Image (spheres, rainbow, N blue to C red):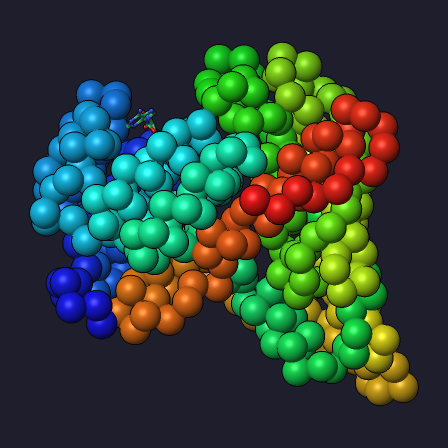
Length: 337
Ligand SMILES: NC(=O)c1ccc[n+]([C@@H]2O[C@H](COP(=O)([O-])OP(=O)(O)OC[C@H]3O[C@@H](n4cnc5c(N)ncnc54)[C@H](O)[C@@H]3O)[C@@H](O)[C@H]2O)c1
């Protein structure tokens, strides 16, 4: 454990809106290991409600929260355009960071985040909660054990019928605050899963973006993206808020030189060539609680988070290249920050 870290680890929650509820449930499940000591939210009513709920010190300005000596680490649950600013403020104050997706929005912000995390030596974990789905974790073990051989192809899908309307959509409707449309929001999850299963860094992207139904959004409501990785594998993803996937569509699948796997998100099927299919069935878990417990473990033990700023920057690289490809109509290189 880091010498300055207290037990339980003292957490400053930055942004107390929708997803903060899932994060707070995660901390509440491990009271002997973590507790909320500070909350920041710019909306006074939201702040008052979160302070009443947690008993923590409240701040309307997160740059004040990060200077609170009763905070060891921050959990950033802000709209996307504020992530980089909050990361920089927290790291400069020496606080460890769990950051909701996306890590940040531009190549310039990626460079800033990389520089400040390296220089200050804080731990940054990307809140990539779907890595904690049991089917994803088991699939990763199967791939890393070499059971599929060399990975050739990865596919992921994350689509649902989103009933947002212009009033309920808030900052997500605007590219300046969301960074794009559906792809940088929900589509971010199947992107990090693609990279996780490929086990490699992205080099090139071809994408088509569409607006099928949510016409009031500035950005797309659907995306189809192809990604080439530096180990030769190719990923393909489909993501949408306009429609749900057809029945029977895999949530993810991976094909390698020795076999394949596929999953609907809970049951995992592994088929090695010439062998019987193996079926792993797992009960769904609270992936946010698992992610938060793992963040605390990383702080306690010094273990590297599954995804740090390194993976967060690479995932953003895919997304920015996809937007560029959709604009130009040609494949776009993934720029490395
Ligand atoms: N992992 C997932 O499945 C998942 C699901 C939903 C949201 N998220 C992510 O969580 C983050 C937050 O999303 P949300 O749905 O909770 O949004 P939200 O709008 O419900 O909450 C954001 C909160 O930030 C506060 N805020 C805005 N500007 C602020 C500022 N300058 N200082 C302090 N507080 C400020 C708002 O008042 C609000 O309470 C986003 O990055 C989003 O992509 C992840």
